[in-house]
Length: 356
Image 1 (spheres, rainbow, N blue to C red):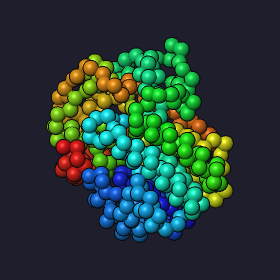
Image 2 (cartoon, rainbow, N blue to C red):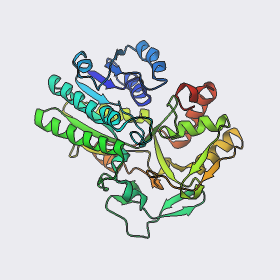
Image 3 (cartoon, rainbow, N blue to C red):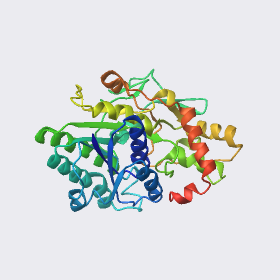
């Protein structure tokens, strides 16, 4: 089988490629990457040693896509993954859409031309910020906990946010571009007869992630903490009680293997993939883990909540479990320790990844 991974030298793309090659002997992997993301060049050599053919190109360019060889499946891991993209002054709104939506159209045209299956790595940010911000939470220890005694909207339970949760705007430009990409992918697949799967991923994490405060928060926090760089709890009273779950990027591979198997079918095309409640932690909890691992470090506080901040977001992946028999494999402590070991071995990682 021949697979093309877009954004292959990013964290998700490179991790998936390496794990997939280890898992499936004889797999042929191609990749395309623009190397815009600082640090991504470092992943090229290791992938090439594994036999991956990497094309230096940009999914925003149709001619770059036209130059790629035909494959059986495309895994779209190319995106600007920041919820602040397009509104924070670092990137224009048009550039964000060119990366995360217009680029998807070029990939879908490629799939149409070669009759290749398409798997979109989407995001939990397709769910409504207004609805997520209004979730009732209570404080338990150093973290927010979902208040299940109150009426909850459709798609929300003690297990987290499911696929039926509200996807009405506002989502952020990033989330809206991803939701639009999902719709286009499903339409292309139906119109032109190629298989499409939508995998809505929660916070991906693991060693080698390019940690920044607006993306890759687990890698950023641990790398900054170990070096005693300034850290700040922002919003919700400045306590660090906001909670997210994390998923090791390599844990996506068992599902990708099933989704790309000949004749694979399922009653739904879209599933959540997250670490769930067992892999959820607050920022304050992450600091406590760091303090035990590295020693004390003071974290500053800024009480004001920002526009896109949410108090509690945990992905409910039960549907992926019932449809595909999938569940996260790597427990939270193992993910954090993996990041910590990488941080200790690469003292300049935040500079390499452009976080400082």
